[in-house]
Amino acid sequence: MDRLYEPPRSWTWPHYRFAQWSIPKIIALCGGHRVVGAENMPDEGGALIASNHLSHLDPPVVGTAIRRRTYYFAASELFSNPVFGFIIRKCYAFPVKRGSGDRRALKAAIELLAGGELLTMFPEGTRSHTGELGEFDLGAALAASRAGVPIIPCALTGTNDVLPRGASRIRRGKVAVGFAEPIDTLQFGEKPGKEELRRITEQVEEAIRTMKAEQAAWLGGEPLGEAPSGQEPDGE
Image 1 (cartoon, rainbow, N blue to C red):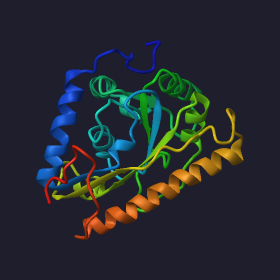
Image 2: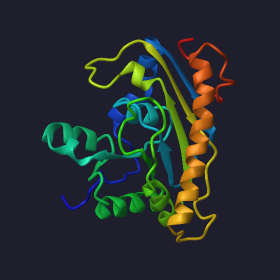
Image 3: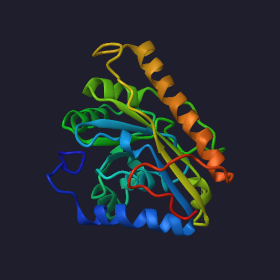
Image 4: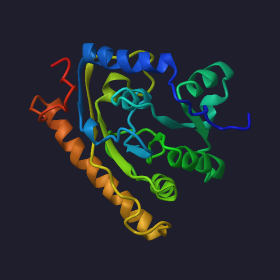
């Protein structure tokens, strides 16, 4: 297959739209679902969503918290099973070789972003064992800056309780999703160097830490603030 990713079209696969409708309702029934900051997602144009990573549940939770579709990086080994690989490709995931500086995947990411699509990345590279933020690599800042699009920090809390490592089914628990204001990746020029990419990445990390602190308060029973317009705090 020459193209690494599912071709962008003027329409979105119906099963993807069904997931956007159904998954938040399922999570709400499991204990609670809250989305804050969805208004920070642009209605059109490219943007990179950079999220912390806790669970295999994270990609669908991010994708169903917004109205637009988003593409995803996914570990290349997930595509080794032809059937599963076909399914996740039709859910807009495409493979990346972890830890190898995959230039082909980076090029695909830049193409999608420059073409006006959303792309979700998990800069930690793997799921956190502790729930705390791990070290972020510079790939998200690099892809977004090369494409000339903003980064939208995304914070997830609770997905590792609903679907922990090694679990074969979801459990009861609350899930919080937060989106911060977009970060301008061109603040240091069109081709920022490694130090500038690190500074952009630190801004992303700080935004996620701030949101996770607010989410922890909600999971502990304290109010998390107002839900965005059209996003009600389900399951409370």
